[in-house]
Image 1 (cartoon, helix red, strand yellow):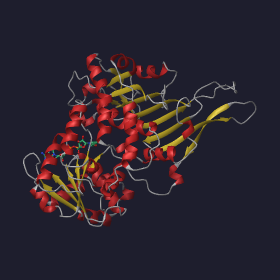
Image 2 (image 1 turned 30 degrees about the vertical axis):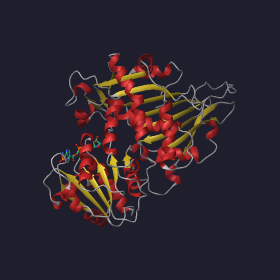
Image 3 (image 1 turned 90 degrees about the vertical axis):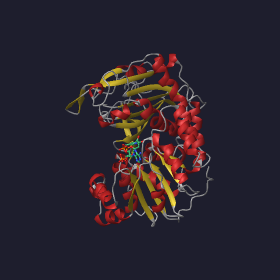
Image 4 (image 1 turned 180 degrees about the vertical axis):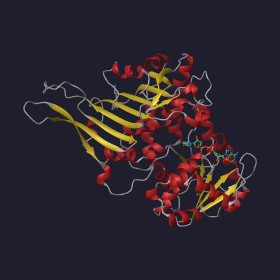
Length: 487
Ligand code: NAP
């Protein structure tokens, strides 16, 4: 294993993308690198070396990027001269990692540069790529590797990937990406919690009565059925994105912002998540699969009618569950997680519900949740605090109003996209917003029994019409505790 070293950011940088012609590279990575270039956030001597199996020379690759990537940069951010100077940074190396060694790449990559290897391929290629990078002498103490999800399909496969990559890279060189951790509002939640003192005394049981985390997609499975049908919502969304969000809500204050200080606290949360037995799985989880319905005003097919989905597929496109963080702080506070495809609309949010006042002093107004902190992640990022206020006029009628922490008007600075922010972190050697090996494995340790339990219980997904908020069992899950999903 290569020893870790403090990154030296004055060195030239070679950003080497495996899967450099793939969907992720075109839609997210190159546009994010362009934005970093536009705003002067890449070291001057940066080159981006894309690899792929096409028999392309550099000119053909640049034409491919023009055609497939440029349109993902918004008009407001596109500048002709910046785009041209960005393209000058690009190189292309043809390589089939299953057949070729990486000597062609070694010839192009500069000796002494910081090498960032972005593995934007199927994870089944990660082991081969890492072995061949080492064999080609490309992995030195300054090298970094970025791993895209999915990082395994269960604990055993995640361990395999971690072992294989860990043979060639020290843990401090490995950046496991979860783009939710790159979102401004998610990072801001840490500032809100730990940069202020007013929330901390309240941020615990019994002051908080429940936490909801929703990541709802409006789209269906689209062209991803080949991948998705073997995966499902639990592995694709809950095990990674939703648990990472839960960690940020539930973690104890870290001793510093050093990567391991933050990741130690997240790990403690993951290890404190209550384990599911079969009875809890049957009672506290809901699997769903969308059937035909409407998205907007458009009729859309059900999951089983989508291209490349087996007609008898039992894959879940929706999960809702209730879980607990078994610590003093969170004792008896339910955490409700929910994610799904073909929901009524795209909406990701964290909702922290505070306990109601102990005595109803204003009986003219019917009850309800008095205070919520709502952290919206998608489609817009916003933080809102709901409080009760007196309606003007006679009597003491209350009404809920929102204290809107409007970050867009508070800050004039540009807000970078998650991938751009995380790529800049990689370039600068900042690991705080990336998952450590033990975090990833702890998340699978929690998720595996649920997935296996569904199999053991022969739990078929419940149907829900496309364009709705999921099966009725998901509403019942909260209703029996006296809560409801906050849309
Ligand atoms: P993709 O479009 O299928 O691209 C995969 C890339 O891998 C292609 O460029 C392909 O090269 C390359 N590749 C496959 N076999 C190869 C080989 N033997 N040697 C060299 N290159 C090889 O997939 P993607 O959607 O970009 O996803 C890439 C990774 O990111 C996956 O792990 C995916 O799960 C993850 N991810 C993707 C998204 C997304 O929005 N797309 C989101 C989150 C995570 P060719 O061009 O030669 O076929």
